[in-house]
Amino acid sequence: MKLLVTGGAGFIGSNFVLYMLREHPSYEIINVDALTYAGNLENLHTVESNPRYTFIKADIADVQQMEAVFSQGIDVVVNFAAESHVDRSILSPDIFVRTNVMGTQVLLDAAKKYQVTKFVQVSTDEVYGSLGATGLFTEDTPLMPNSPYSASKAGGDLLVRAYHETFGLPVNITRCSNNYGPFQFPEKLIPLIISRALNDEAIPVYGDGLNIRDWLYVEDHCSAIDLVIHNGQSGEVYNIGGNNERTNIYIVESVLEQLGKPASLIQYVQDRLGHDRRYGIDPTKIRTELGWQPAHNFETGIKETIEWYLKHQDWWTRIQSGTYQDYVQLQYGKR
Ligand code: NAD
Ligand code: DAU
Image (tube, rainbow, N blue to C red):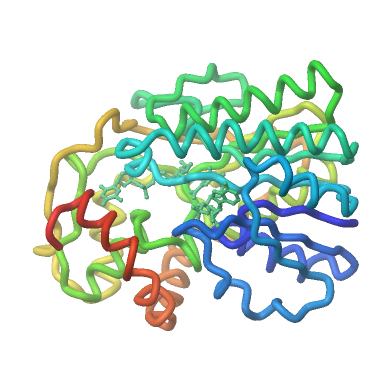
């Protein structure tokens, strides 16, 4: 099996490349990544000389570059490549449309032309919008994206659906809740708390801190996608989540406590524009139809994650320089 992983140098993509090389000793993986600020080949240094692994620096929205990749013969595509950070989409929506919508369309055209056997679109629960105090997102929940990020992901999802309906392309769409774990860029909440707290910097909490996210350890997301590749019914959507809803303030307080840092670092700041109040995934379909089970519970997963960031301070301090500083300046003002 020749597997094309796009965005494999990012957080989830790099965890997925490592997971698939380990779990499937006969698979060949081609990782295509444009190496934006979020792409980091250091995540994959342990496999760079593995003969079953190839890296190609390329942009999924570039037709010629994708033609060159697909003409090598690809069996399955898993599309992780995206602009992924909501706050950045509020500052500059254009790049989100280019990569998440147009990039997906370029990939779909190539997948159709070269007749791949499966195209998996890695999407997000954010396309469903925001929940009230009760209820969960099912695969039948209407799409109601609220941020430029989630709107661009929903646009990509709709194109994937359309290529299935119109051209018969064998596809799946997965919609996962918030991931955490090793190699997550420190703009995202959990690594942001850890990296700032270790520097005794204020932890910005948006609004009242009572927004709810449904957290899943990244490797459990990888195992779910693995099952979808092999057993997902063509044309179907699968929601992925581990029933781990937590308020943001709970996450901040518990990470600070585990780091031995004071709650006085917490700083309530202006709310994110269009901030979704609550996400919660109903994972019944993937559990019952594909037999997926998460292997990590939140308490052990977060403990392991904190230990990873403590052990790999060189990893995140290196990426906290350069362009990331420009973003931090724009987003939070002076640090
Ligand atoms: P990330 O930002 O860490 O990684 C994205 C990767 O895509 C980077 O390596 C980047 O270089 C690459 N990339 C960006 N634009 C590209 C382009 N034009 N061509 C090729 N490569 C490009 O993101 P992540 O958190 O790992 O998310 C991966 C995917 O999973 C995204 O599609 C995201 O929407 C989805 N997702 C993320 C989460 C989460 O909690 N992080 C949850 C559900 C779904
Ligand atoms: O739900 C899946 C989504 O999870 C993915 O599709 C996105 O790619 C991923 O970035 C993530 O989106 P969120 O917006 O939920 O994640 P983020 O880590 O940015 O924020 C988590 C919550 O914490 C959110 O309610 C906003 C809040 N927050 C975030 C930051 C960065 C703060 O209060 N302060 C912060 O500084």
